[in-house]
View 1: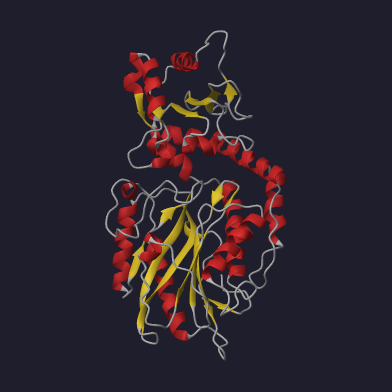
View 2 (view 1 turned 30 degrees about the vertical axis):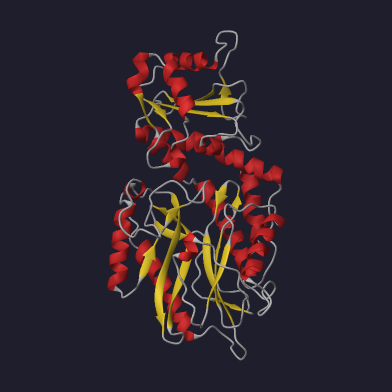
Length: 455
């Protein structure tokens, strides 16, 4: 484990400098598989027991069929399993906290024809239980759990992976005496998905840095030739760059322009409709929305660049000052991160603080991790700055990651229009407070320039 992680961390470190563009070192498929399995084993051994005891669920059952996997199960499969096998049933049973000094934890079983890698032991004996459901019921009877958690949830798709058919067949087979022990494992599933381990966070900074590097190169004169290059050209360059590096992206990037002209920039349109292709010109304020997937973790970042006009050597002061307002809205939000507060409460406090500071902020921040729009507290939505029922009521927990996504609306007298500084950076919250995983953009990137805008 240590050898693989040290290679990942220090093997990449020499490639990253915001003063120059360089190709980051990416792990081979085999090396990635080793890291993924090591992280998963660590999480199942050291984190899962705490989460199950926190929710009071002593048996967690996850059921999926091949190509229709429960989102939680997808995060629990070994690296060489790209999907479930036939019907795969995972059973996690907590027999209780062991006496001090003794080993113990959550027992892990696969009611399936196969062991699930080295993570779950196969427990389906075809000689004694030809029917898979009978094998599962036998395990339940043997363990006699007090609470059986199943993945169904009203508010979280991530935790609602039990299909109608699988739920019906399971409940038809489950003896009546156990029916009243079945509960939603929604919070347990969300906790599993949102909680980042120490080892994951050591890696996450490198993933965020790779994503930053790609944006840095995209917003440079290596890619952009004013008067020729279009916003679509930059978008597809980013997609191709991700592919060439052997990575993936979880959404198609966007690149859009705000400029000095009569056109009104409609912020809502960037969500409801993709920006139209435009030729990039000197004097344009560029914006991108971009993210990658690597080692089963995701990034989500939005940054700005400015194309210098003839005779300009730096970004105009009025745009620099506008950008600072975006950073201030970020501060208003992250300064209000307190463990136990709901997403709705954090949103209300952040908006109140930004208003007092004379800022016109809109906040739509979401958790990030195994999914891009991940499980956890919703902190505003782009089309709803009030309460979000359900996910907005969920509390902020320690050791969780977020995409700090928002914008500041700023009136520019020089352009005789309103611009929006749209920012998004990935951050982490623990007992020490909030921090950006790989820093945040504090200056608009000039094109052309020396690459030093992200700090």
